[in-house]
Length: 280
Image (cartoon, rainbow, N blue to C red; front, side, top):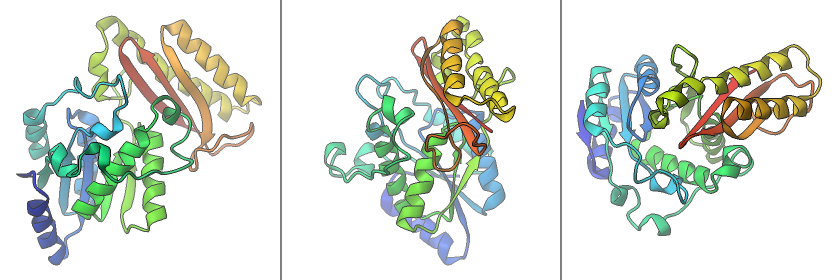
């Protein structure tokens, strides 16, 4: 596996692959990799002969008071795990490489509608930061396809809308959430949980599953289901931000009776912010 940090060296390598007719799969990450990230890599390996992974902690998607400075940087361990899983190229740009004019003066990509509400309400500017860095990475790597985890469901919707609106010939593949044996979605932020909080954390997934089961069973009042779920999370010890039933494709609010839905939730447990979702 080759590790590159400059734009010129990256472009030279991927241009060579493209001239040879080789498809490129891309997995963008912020590092501190876990089994969920590695599952994306393994799926990428099945879909293309060349796999590129980026590790870049993107300051543009962190808001005031969020964990940019304390976000774990584990590049040596990440590099070893990626090499063991057959990655061809690891791209590790600096902030100056990604934002040569400075973060504050960079062009920003905004994706309306799907960025609004849900996590967009509680993390203002977050999805503009995500869309901006992914757009730049796509332009640098020029992949045929890119893979993202379905745990970050709204993020996946934002990327799909951006690619569709801008007409980029990049296939976006969502990969099912990888979970711990007790159901907790794997996340880099799980390590912020204390031992006691770790025992409580799987309740988020359980509550969302209960809402999804009620929708499947024909429950007639979606707003009541959302309120009950919020109350259940509070009772379990969470500080919930939202539980909402949305259209699975557009993420627009749905009326009772619609079935192509996804139940999404976000809640704080101690210093950790956990998100999850369940498709109906």
